[in-house]
Image 1 (cartoon, rainbow, N blue to C red):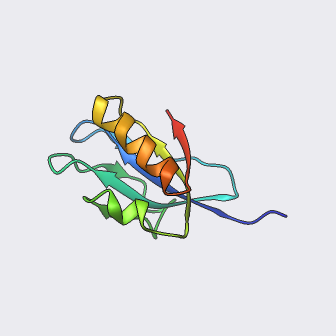
Image 2 (cartoon, helix red, strand yellow):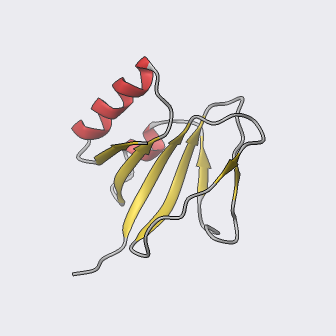
Image 3 (cartoon, helix red, strand yellow):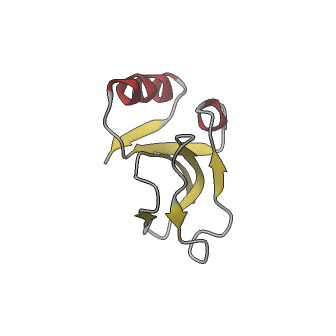
Length: 94
């Protein structure tokens, strides 16, 4: 069965840094969680329905999100990974 997996991304980039999500065909970038001082420059043509959020619960409580990718590596992000696992999400550290 080739169902589409929805992805939530914790983006830890720098202001102005381009975000590239070139997931496989069966993955859809649904939400990007950004720090308040960072706005990702993501490819809206490739991911037109991606929502930018500032609250982790927008991803954790979204039952349609299957996979959480964490691209930042801080102590708080380890805690976020544990919360995502408890919420029934698959987690990938990138």
